[in-house]
Image (cartoon, helix red, strand yellow):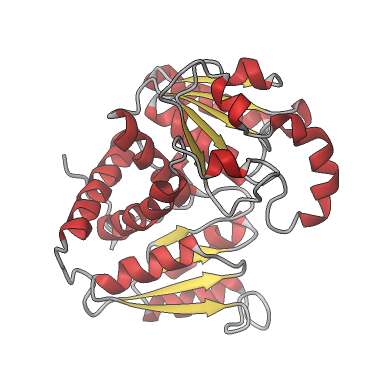
Length: 312
């Protein structure tokens, strides 16, 4: 199964077919096996990538830098303190300049429009390392983790509990719908994703046999779930909303009782990290035998390497 993805950007998983996503996951699986076996390649020798960060990062930055560097490439980290991104120079002009000097660009920041403009004007592959709207590289790591655990993606039941309208929920609903998972958002109605996005996801389900459900009831929402997934209650830049969020999200905390409510012994817990322990998840669950968060964090690296290998 081979696809020619050379030159393609990854701005949202909406741009990739289920077959192409499957292909990326197979490259990631292979990259992980090579990494474990100590097999070295230099597939990015003589190549460079610009890593633009408006927001701080642990996993995304480390995954891009180590994956690219291990393959012999040269990653260049650029924060907004380092370059004129939209400050004294338009994003379009910055994109054109970077496109002449680099082989690819990663962007992590606020607006989806920024990453789209970089892709439009640079002429090289651009990867969305997180925007306020989407976090596609994270979802690829999530899918790889689920696949490793259950041997398949089709029909796996995943309950996403908490803030159902942030970039993680937006990206998961697309990724799960495309790959045929049974995806439930468990959140207060005011934190449900946009109707438009739900409609798009349900459209994908017609082909994939996936399922999309939205519910306000935590116990009902996690029933039979093989995966319980959560994220912080206030995303980056929303810290001022934490008090208010705690008020209506505390019934959605992932604790041992909620994990038991699935009625399954094989349920695993996932979190894209960083986590605020004792808020959206208890330390007991995070550190417990059902947690796969560290595998998931490691898989960021292998899936990011896969995207770069396929597109550069």
